[in-house]
Length: 465
Image (cartoon, rainbow, N blue to C red; front, side):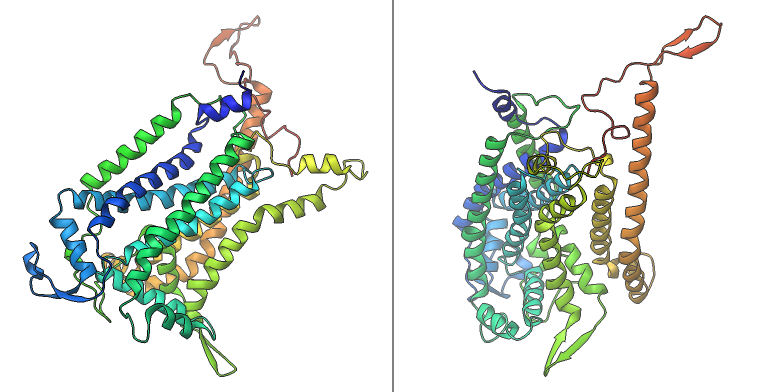
């Protein structure tokens, strides 16, 4: 006879927000299948050749073998363009699903013990997904690929002392060299996918060990939820690959040192980096004869490094803070070690976002900060569309990325408090039924329905740390 925890494990999804993890898993599966197909036809070689394919505007143009094979794969191999576009869309969806999964875990406190390892797995999957996308973007050796390589080299050169050595090790003596695409190829098809597969397998094992977390008012998922999510994810990716063009390299042309297309923007998950580079002032700092380019170092390396470090260490930091705040009970007596450990352990029933207004507001501020940086990556296009100067749009975003998160925090915090007050009203007066009855005094009033939540609303529940 199967235990209730085992039944919940087999039942699949219990709440719609749990679909993000499933979408990440199945989009990664599509990435593997389509990637194997693309490996058969792609040649990661930077040797120069003359293009002689079916796309006549480029006939006779010197290109690399990597670009030539990508063009033949897209326009001459039967089904090649479809598979390539599904592969690209799968990468975008995978990173989006991982980011949404992290956001869901953060606002519902699903990162607490015993699920800290799962939180760390998802935190690691986010930069790995971004690395997989970027290493894949440079492989066709088109104009956008060249822009990505310039950004990578600039970030490496901004590192104090060792930056120039790292750039020479990766690109060789002269940019872009003839080894960068083969290096990125093996990282893209072997190293990064293997790391992602190991982490997803470890995550699945942890879920089977600890069981699925759930919301108090949600019922266990249906037995067919996981196959249904697999079919939905694959179906959406197929539709995207068929109907929506992405990365048309024949329109971009081959990469050339010092050249980039107008209006070029990276994939959505790297938009924050492009936006930060565009609005960062051109500050420099000279220390001991070394000049630090803060305009590149801070947005390209310091800011992402701090973000992922804080994200990974948040469960430990919260645990230490809560241990200090909840060390004594209401009467001032010290709590026993076992009781304190029980209170600091993540519950099987998740918090609703309104139950932790500060944490939810912090998440909203982070999303707002990222969204503004993402929009800043299109400062030139916004200036062109609204007939403004690029300098004016850039200055606007410099102030917006500082004030916008504060406004998002305040609005979200007030919204959570309002929802808590609504919970209190429902608990005290019952749910609206729409049934009007006449009282003994002759007046009319609505007959409320009893509250049927499995969990007590946050407005009247014991205060959570």
